[in-house]
Length: 297
Length: 197
Figure 1 (cartoon, chains in turn brown, yellow):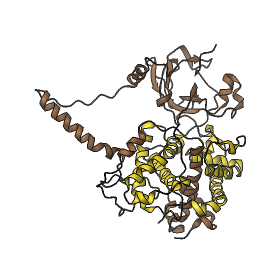
Figure 2 (cartoon, one colour):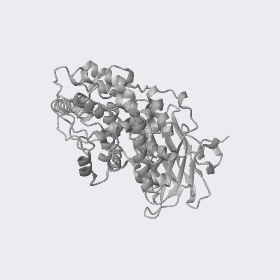
Figure 3 (cartoon, one colour):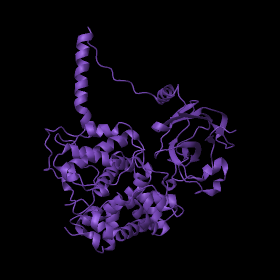
Figure 4 (cartoon, chains in turn purple, orange):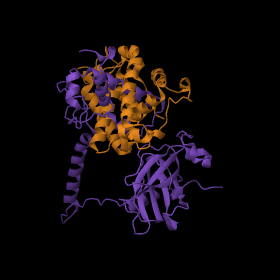
């Protein structure tokens, strides 16, 4: 194959290959890219550059792997009798759907790995039902927990430890605070799970504005937004993590799951802002009705 | 803390994996699971989705190992390329644009920002080399590359978060990546690209 790593590329091929490597390919570009880069070496060269950059960051700032994941990866390795197929030629191009990778002789994807166990579990359930229940009953699916129930479960999980961050709301003078503010914010850092209960905020019309939660992570750099002052050791000068957009209805205190868009390593303060519908990438923090911050003093 | 281990100093395993060697696959998982997890977790916010994706990635590596040519490229780059492809697929599959996954990307740690001493990073020599190359770029190019590559922001999200015009963002990204490709070229020609046709 020709090697695009060691030669100049046309500007257009650079554009198309870079977009491809970043997953930002535009509609209609694929045919032109195939024509300019028939052996795919240019796009692979850019993919390799992106991979090198991504690896450098990952190696510099690694994320701790969850317990048990490595064992699950080991368990998915095919048995000795399974033939390793080299006949299939997976298309390594970036497509919206790369097809099934869980064929029998292949290493099993998570769902495929679970499938035999699900069959076995289902068989056991049926057998137990026949043996133990004089009157056959249709299996009842486990009900989906409501957000409030999930919050209660999280509180119950941490009933006997101090691993759950739990802050009462600190209201500001923003006009969206229309009554006595009730509720709290809870956050389980180990599992990136948390909930807000909120009462006392103005009911919003989602087509006009929405509320948005922001999470301040102590591991993130400070000082990027110095206009936000020195409070809390300068914590508010960092750019926080988006914790999700939500609405307030007229049903009293509402329960809202926190939906962080990135891994939160050490959430230490939280702020609710008012933003245009859909939320924003960077808040100007012109309206901040609620804070959830460490107790002062 | 799981260590992210660069495969640069290891004997490549993918040839053995391609022959169905289970023990080689176990060693490969031990070697790269930390790296793959770190690449995935910073772009996929759901831990469950991230764990599923890591398993799919290793399934893909098992399936694609025969395409690796050690005479052309390093094993860790091959693994990272497959990982990135799967992450991009996943983001498309679940209906979230990369920008929605990382709305706060400008806040992300800029590991090669001017005021940090690269030599003091507890990381691999290869990562330091890449960081030095990145730091040599114009700041706006470096910033857009970090936001796109490391945090998965789209052109439009980078434009919104940095205040740069969309066309400027695209130009910085495209020219910046090409500049990195050129600057890394002496090393890349020896050890970068492992996917063969």
